[in-house]
Length: 261
Image (cartoon, rainbow, N blue to C red; front, side, top):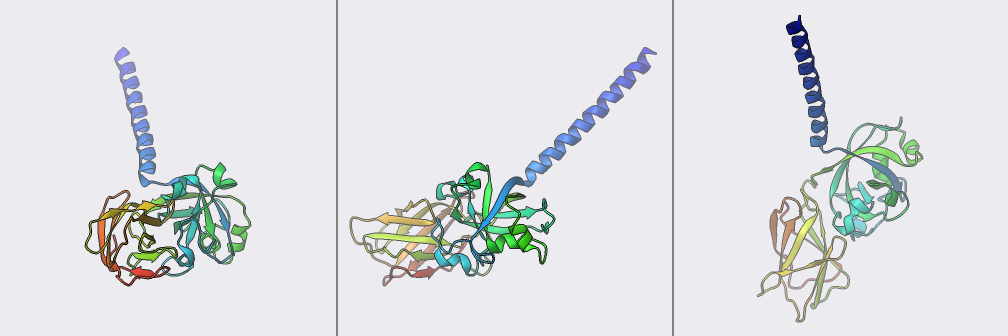
């Protein structure tokens, strides 16, 4: 009789252990998928790009291909003192009747420093176009009127098909002060370092300006053409844009490379 009792206890313990393993596996599987919870608001025009410019320094590029206004300002944790500029995220909205349940991808191009953005651990302040893309057909207006939405999100690789990295030279750049915004990086989207090599010289480390703008001050005039070496932040991949900014470069111009990550 005691043996039967012990066997029953043993079987029950095994079953309990198996259930606990299954629960742990499910939890780890969810975590491995990389999805988290965030809040979503929106700003700007209903079908617009949020802000033509924004804290990252992309200017009018946010409204044009390949971004197509599918952009977002990030709260403090996503903007990350400018290091989040250029990063891409997938967002899925399911908690509202107007939500489509289909994922969209947005690029961080601006900062949302106050209000709900500061009170939420993770908050996306989407462009009008991006929040409309979360909605079922014909229900974008309902979603825009819903206040703070609860969504699922995860980091995603950036992919700008048919587009290579571009460098928009700052309006204030001159031979002693070179500065430019780096645009359209595939993969990580953010950069660990940017280095510039003037004609006849070695590579010089540039300083990020809490945005997608990188600068270098030089004690002597820098001459082009310039090579630019980029290192991505997470994957640490390195690419070099050879001669991308020419010797006769001009301020407030965009120069396109033939490379990408």
